Image (cartoon, rainbow, N blue to C red; front, side):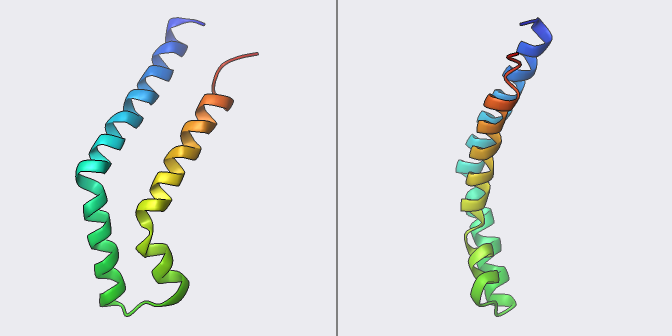
Length: 78
């Protein structure tokens, strides 16, 4: 593996770690507040309220899927 491929993988993993730390300490609370405010302000019910109310879950699932996809599809193995 060459240095450029290693640098790309390390940058991706570092970016995931930084985003995860920011999400845990700052963004999750803000996203929860915005979701609750949108649900109450717009009187949402049903599937729309469920999707917006669980926005942190969708972000966590997307991060997990992106990480797994990167590790398997972008591993550079031939």
